[in-house]
Amino acid sequence: MQKFMALLFITSVLLLQACSQLPENIEPVTDFDVNRYLGTWYEIARLDHSFERGLQQVTAEYSLRDDGGIKVVNRGFDTQKQEWDEATGKAYFVGDKNIGQLKVSFFGPFYGGYNIIALDEAYQYAMVCGPDRSYLWILARTPDLDQSIVDNLVKAAGGLGFATQELIYVDHE
Image (tube, rainbow, N blue to C red; front, side, top):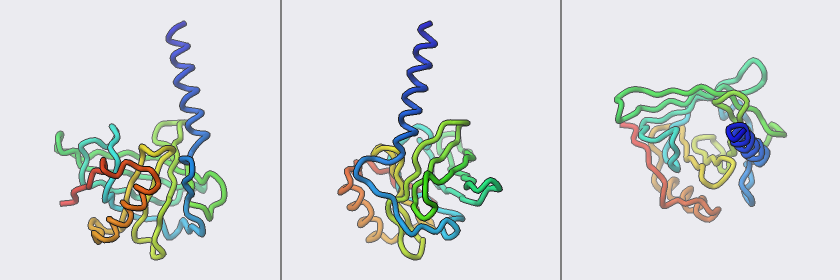
């Protein structure tokens, strides 16, 4: 019975988290064009999470799925194991397809928020957060992003309440 109650509690927490896909007082970008967002993005910086711990040379590849969703392939080099690690998932818009707010899943029916909160007009760099402020990524179309742009994104993220002093800067060498 204790195991059942623990499982019920965990499931309830995950479902509640899935319902709140966007951190409070943070807005996703509007006038979003998914076709311009597709392709390869390089991870420039991120907040630490167990599923990416120790990974360098991290990329995300986005392509359209037949069901209208987006195929997500995240790939990074595990520096400790000296091998590539890859995860494939799927993402779907939470509402209007012109708003950069999606839900993404790598594990069956469990979805987390994927919120594009900054995106330049040329779709060359972006800032993405998850369902709360413990998830943050700075992405770019190239492995290197001009330091002034990184600094501006980090400053903006700090102003939104993210722990930018804990950012991990990804090595693409």
